[in-house]
Structures are given as C-alpha cells and as structure tokens.
Figure 1: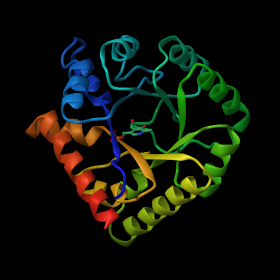
Figure 2: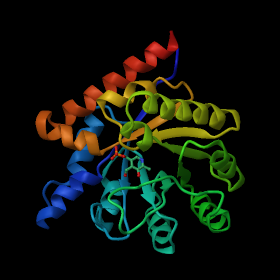
Figure 3: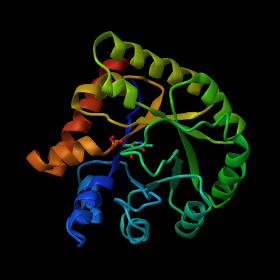
Length: 247
Ligand code: PXP
C-alpha cells in the first residue's frame, strides 16, 4: 500500500487577515492548533522580507508553543538564515522571493544560484535543520539540488493548478516525471502551491511524493466551513487518491 502522504498546513493567510487590521486576531497559532487537531502533520509559514503576513514573533511562538514540526519558508538571505539559526525549526524550505510578487511565482534557480546556495544550505543543515528547495518540476533543477547538498525538494504545483484541460494534464505529467526523477536520485520529494480540492487528487496519487504543503485555498474555504472541516476534507481527498494509487 502506498504510504500515508504528510500534510503541511500553510498558515500565512490567517496572518494576512490579522494584519489587515493590525491587531492580533485571527491568531495564526490558533490556526496551527486547529490544524493539529484536524490531522495535519506539520505547519508551514513564510516569513517574507516585507512581513506582509507572518511576522518575526509568530515564528518564535510557532517553534515554542506548537507541537507539530515547523517548516520555515525563507529566502536565502543573511537575515532569514540568522532567524532560522536562532529558532531552529524542524525544516527550512528555500524559496525565491521578489518584493513585488503577490505570491511565490516560480521555483528557485538552483543551477544559477549554486554558489550562493551551498553555504546557506550547509549552515542550516549544520544546525540540524532539514533543508528543502522549492523548484519547478524540471529534472535539471533536481540534479542541481543534489549537487548543492539539499536532501529534500518541493515541486512547484502552481502551473498545474492554474492550467486547464490538456495543458493541466501536461503540467501534471511534468510533476509526475520530476517526482520519479527525484526519488531515483535520492531526494525526498514534496509538492505544493495553489492546491485545492479539484487539483489535489492526481498530485496526491503520485507514489514518490512524501508531503504536500497547502495554505491559501484552505484558509479561504475556512471562511465558509471552518478551518478544521476544510483540512479534514483535504486530508480525505489525499487519502482517497493515495489508496487508489496503491491498487
Ligand atoms: N509551498 C511553498 C514553497 C510556498 O511558497 C507556498 C505558498 O506560500 C505553498 C507551498 C502553499 O501554497 P498555497 O498557499 O497556494 O497553498
């Protein structure tokens, strides 16, 4: 039987709503606790340079007060490395970051950024942090991830989620091939970005994937059905797709 796929809940957009009024409600930590109760395996949070959603204080509180492992999404900057080394989350996912983007637009260029990434990955790994690189589903980027010493990659599913029809099928095939390649060269493979109820199944069915990270859709859906129900439904869809993949 295919192994259970881990579900990381990205709580960034609970903080987005909080920040809209500048106060402390809704608290992303409360969301993390609900996620834990709903069966999440981890919490993901992206501390952006402009602090538009998660803030510095949230990271400390998540590490200290939440039992689930924290996946700290970060740009490969000196500022973010220092914060990661201070808090020592379970994992750090290195993402490209542009100040003007609405969300993370594409994967990291591991090939072009090799010289910069090697010492960043080494410093995080030496502190006991499991490093993953957020990449587009391209085999050459995965080979580069191995070369720079990353044990984990997260495949960007955004293009697949945004596409329709045959284009979506094509994007899914890219993810399938990249996940198989990652497993073949010894990388642990995660995936995420843009996943929703209508798109999660075919991704969850890819047997070499170990973890999905999902946020924006669930926080939006929580407005209508509550966060716990939204996460439980996502978990159900993942499990159904996974058990189908086993057959
Ligand atoms: N994985 C990574 C690396 C991301 O940058 C994001 C978005 O912050 C996600 C997963 C979650 O994407 P979404 O919020 O669209 O589900």
